[in-house]
Length: 130
Length: 132
Ligand SMILES: Nc1ncnc2c1ncn2[C@@H]1O[C@H](COP(=O)(O)OP(=O)(O)OP(=O)(O)O)[C@@H](O)[C@H]1O
Ligand SMILES: [Mg+2]
Image 1 (cartoon, each protein chain N blue to C red):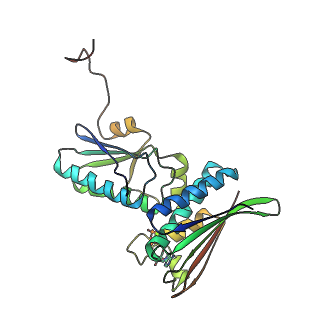
Image 2 (image 1 turned 90 degrees about the horizontal axis):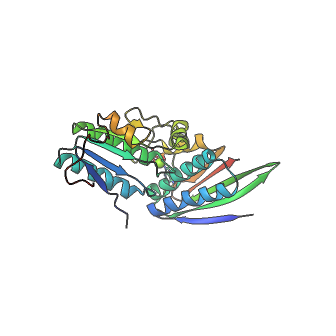
Image 3 (image 1 turned 90 degrees about the vertical axis):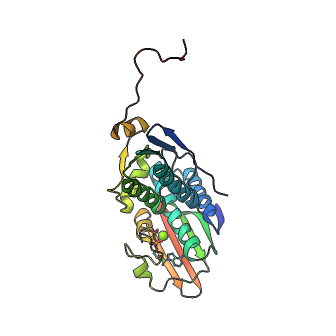
């Protein structure tokens, strides 16, 4: 019925990109999946890219903040990235200030925020392309 | 005048309702921000029907003209339990569903008009209007 949103593991970082209209059950399942992975792996950071979301209502906002606070309880940090400007504006207008929510412009900035950086390793990687 | 109707029975219909209103608002040349406001308000009201009225509802969307301006009116009708105290329900933080109680007050801030008619045991009708 509801779709599953995949969680990519980049070493200690869980990366989630929400590309579909988020149904309530999908959002709740994603929250569960993230918490399970934080518990079962040594991941200590979560980046959720919501650049695919045209609407974030109070329910989705709550799932995001709950996920972030639960991640914190599991000694991990969670950053929301890619929120569209109009979505941010509407959340503000609605009075849904989300102080617990760490945000960043995009995935790269989100990773940096968590103390991770994407960069090319000097020299050639063994087995890499010539 | 254009009129659309969607049944609101489950979560999927909440998504369908906000998609419908977004596309109507796009046709009516609402700005991106105005479309997002309206779709977010619709999402709140449609979800309330699923959550509190057992999904026994519908949304009607209509383009309206008044004087020189044009707008969109959405009417949400359900046969749920009704809202005993509408003023209380409109208050920030009031929820019978152990939620944030942000939906109705938030929706009201996003549209130009919001009115509620409700009768306990009969149902609820919520009308919103957004002017372009
Ligand atoms: N269609 C409806 N039928 C019956 N009761 C309703 C309906 N819509 C809202 N209510 C009542 O009004 C209260 C407030 O609604 P509101 O959307 O503001 O908050 P919520 O749904 O409880 O929380 P949130 O929207 O923040 O998740 C609800 O808890 C519910 O008791
Ligand atoms: Mg609500």
